[in-house]
Length: 93
Image (cartoon, rainbow, N blue to C red; front, top):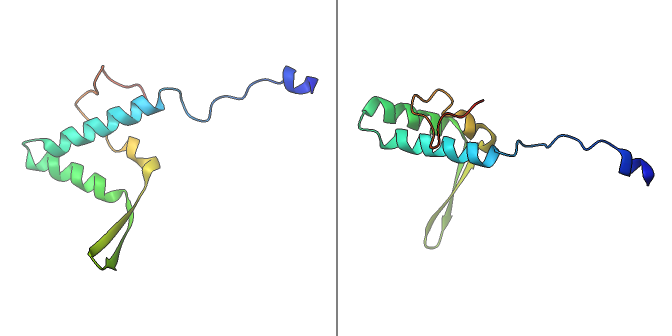
């Protein structure tokens, strides 16, 4: 067991600020979807749609169940080229 005590701790799998970065990116995307410019809204909507892997519609007694498969890992990259800085200033990539 001594070797475990002396072993170097591996680096974290996710950056400690990843949750903040993800939240900021989603905020930027939301803001882009709310813009007055139709071009900006359409570009943001296109980016959102590009993250859908699949949409499954399942009939039910009370209506339709909709299951959306989304590429969650790619969501933080959606707003990398945003001209509007995230809350709290720009995020270093």
